Length: 454
Image (cartoon, rainbow, N blue to C red; front, side, top):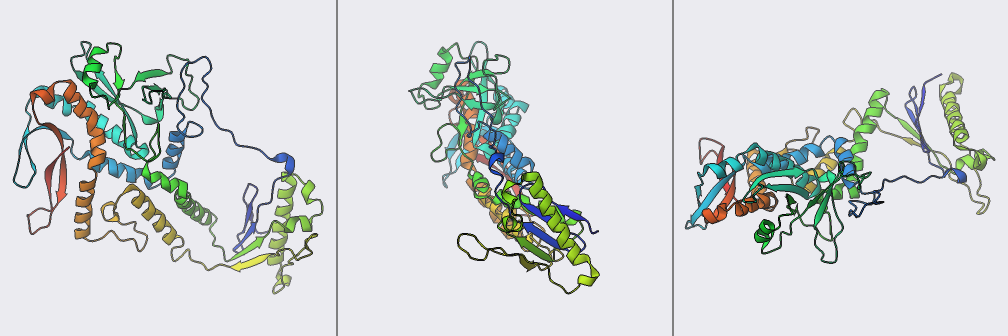
């Protein structure tokens, strides 16, 4: 007998390999006493005064995003592209000593060994790399700043991974005052001092923040809140690209390779699709409503074997498959019967390529990336543009990432204020070293490095 492949789950999809026939059996409602509900994690606050603000309904929104990124062949690398481009070639401390006739700042590099050592350190590079990852993934960053024991200067800046952080619910002041750090959300043990750390946060809107911090000896370290503001969010911002998840485009993109893999693994294409409505089964089996899941699945598999036998027997060549149609006992109208659809074989010509390209285009648009920068998808019509397109797209991208860079620069500039460098060097600023594309008629090279001040 020909091999019959049947999917698991309530909705059944059978593949009759020899005949290149797919059989779709529409899902029917589960038996009344078999219904179940999903399980979600919670955070227990028993024996703990901490009241975390949930990040997502089950307090595991970052975990859900991680699962999406782990299963997406493109999205993680697209976010990484934003990270790499935003970091440029690092930050350099400058002193703005004037403005030229075009309104551009005149910068003088600061040669102070202490200042240069801080901003050229491995610590700052790691802060930027890890911080941009959280910024573009979640729009929420939790940098931790550590002063010296005498509180004369900030000597450390680190990133607490966003997925490990939850804000404590705000009080009547409406100010976010503490971050609860735990690596086991949503099942964090809040009353475990080893597992859970509470870190105070500073109010970046406090006009006397420097004085407040230097006088507050209780704060051994603090969180400098960083986020990209979005509409209607109180505790946690929502990345613009999250619309991909809500709209279903990520789900569509994930199904395309899964379906193609199934076809290739079974070495077949589908020429015919037989659709069996869920109203068929109660009309064919009088005790259908009393069957449990196991019995219903068995009856459906038997029907597949019956279809396969009808298609296989040589003596039945040219005959029709019995199409059983029932009558609705209430309306007395004929119930929908089976439907046999002829499917064109598009796999050799590149089935689903248009769907794949459309999903990729939505991802790039949601992340603000131009296809000319990212490159050709190499599956058909999605071109990557000419050299001029790339140059213009790159320069436009560099022109619009300023607000994101400002978010990551704020803690670094705050460190300069706290350490007295902005007072020592009036006009103190930080700038990125970037690559700008040029045309050959301007230079013998197609790219040069420029300094972009914060």
